[in-house]
Length: 85
Image (cartoon, rainbow, N blue to C red; front, side, top):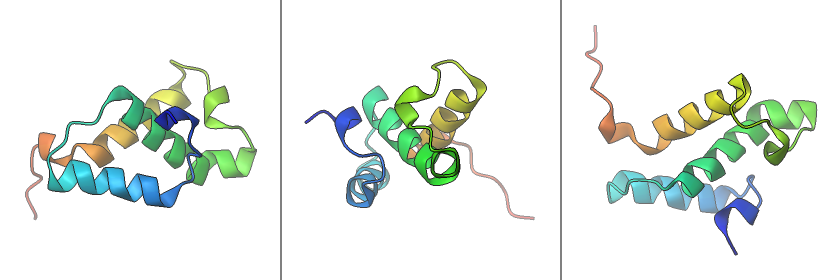
């Protein structure tokens, strides 16, 4: 079953993917990023509005924000470290 067809609220899959990216320094695929973006959408805005992730317009501000959040969650090693003050 392709990842984008799996329920975006599947916590086990999300956590397994997150661990794979962190522990193995796996670079997430576009499909994996979309899966996590969908989970973030579902848990933040989607559950309040009832709008499924697949109905969020590609290229919209909301879509970009969720994809950006997913990329940040799955690729922490690619970011510059932030010094503690």
